[in-house]
Amino acid sequence: MTRIGFIGVGEIASAMVEGLADSGAKPDLQLFLSPRNAERAAKLADSIESATVCRSNQDVIDRSDLIVLAVLPQQTDAVLSDLDIPAEKTLVSAVAGVSTTTLGNHLPHSPTIVRVIPLPAVREHKGVTAVYPANDAVEGLLSHLGGSVTAADETMFSTLSAVTATMSAHFAFLQTITAWLVDRGWDQADADHFIRGQFVGLGTTLAQTDEPIDNLVAAHETPGGLNEMLNSEWMNEANRNYLASALDAVFDRVTRSD
Ligand SMILES: NC(=O)c1ccc[n+]([C@@H]2O[C@H](COP(=O)([O-])OP(=O)(O)OC[C@H]3O[C@@H](n4cnc5c(N)ncnc54)[C@H](OP(=O)(O)O)[C@@H]3O)[C@@H](O)[C@H]2O)c1
Image (cartoon, rainbow, N blue to C red; front, side, top):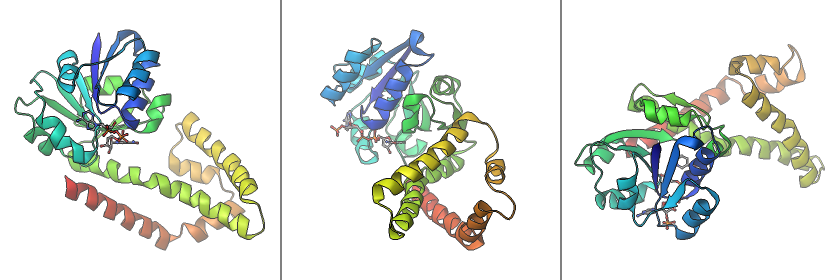
């Protein structure tokens, strides 16, 4: 039986709990939830047979082998300083921008520490989670939630953290396209409807093929055609470099807070 605890039962922990409870790992799982968010934890425990709300955060630790820490970065010091995590346990930290060294400073018994970056799509078993360092038990668990990519060192892990900052810009790209349609006279709702239909198909392509992303670009444009024209005019060298600089700046911020 794999016993997994959750300290911090907010957005991302709930996605992991729901994803695991509905996955191939289900028969072999027991899930232990912090009581801090009583309503949310109770709702999860009511709908998931293998989930139990514990008496305290320490009770979560005592009953679990892997403990997922999913509190906000600024809450981490206070949460860990109240807890006693024995050497044989594994702390799986989803906390953004808090390094293994900083986490280790709060853990006098030196349990195993693994950092992860789960994304909400783990709820549908489609989130690919960043991991550092390699850990068979954690990677095995994540294989039920969409898989994982393991960084060779913590700096490489931070590059994956940086690219998770591109999600709202992805929607801002779509927002800018719909704004152009609205400028040309379309209702916002019709513009949104049309663009949603166009991009949902691309999401499906990403989900359903292992085709390299480079190939997907070529597969969606005809030489001399309209897609190639827009791509080369918009994603020109200057804009690609600008995006790379913005990623460098996010990476610097992520690693500065380490
Ligand atoms: N959401 C994402 O997509 C995502 C993705 C990757 C990584 N992360 C990281 O995961 C962490 C959690 O993010 P989130 O979006 O899930 O945040 P969230 O919804 O705010 O959840 C954090 C939870 O921690 C609880 N908490 C605070 N102090 C606690 C304590 N002493 N004991 C137990 N629980 C406590 C909070 O309860 P209260 O509300 O009562 O304070 C809240 O429910 C963050 O560090 C974030 O950077 C999030």
